[in-house]
Image: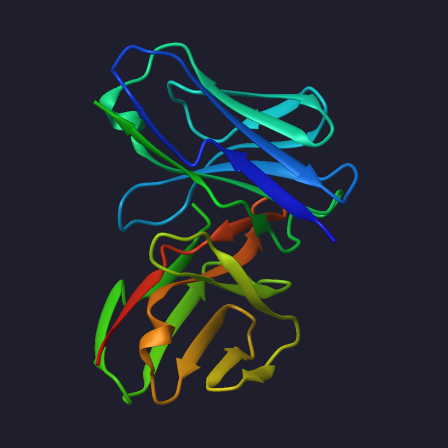
Length: 114
Length: 110
């Protein structure tokens, strides 16, 4: 069966520090991968998605970037965190070639920028 | 732009009361999906509806897909405290990308 991992689970970082969040998927090949951010009590904001290694699409302009160095690895990064980057970051995957397919979410990383 | 909208944003109910959340799309959808996110957790897929007018049930949860395939609803009968969470609908919009509604947060008073 497929599983999706995210780490760390929680993170507290000072403003201006770098960020690296990692997501890995097991049990499937060539998944579509997604990064979402969720502010407290709010909906899901799609940040990036990837249909393959090295292929990244950005949905909103922001202080963050994403990379996909391996088929089942998706990384969210920032060079300098802002207070507004605080939130709950969720990684998700869906089957290849069907971005309308069901998405399966990881447990998330709760980021607090102070 | 094209989007998926959900109402209400929040709903408080007494345990045992019914609850309904509504989802509307600006475009016809090939399918509609529903997810539940427990407090502190991540969204979990509940169900997918594909056919016009389709109705599916999961125990006390009833899901409907509108005849025009532009709206959907989730109805919970006799809510329990375990139903607490945020319910999201999602449909493929704009380039066949799954787009999530803003969610309805359900709170149940015991």
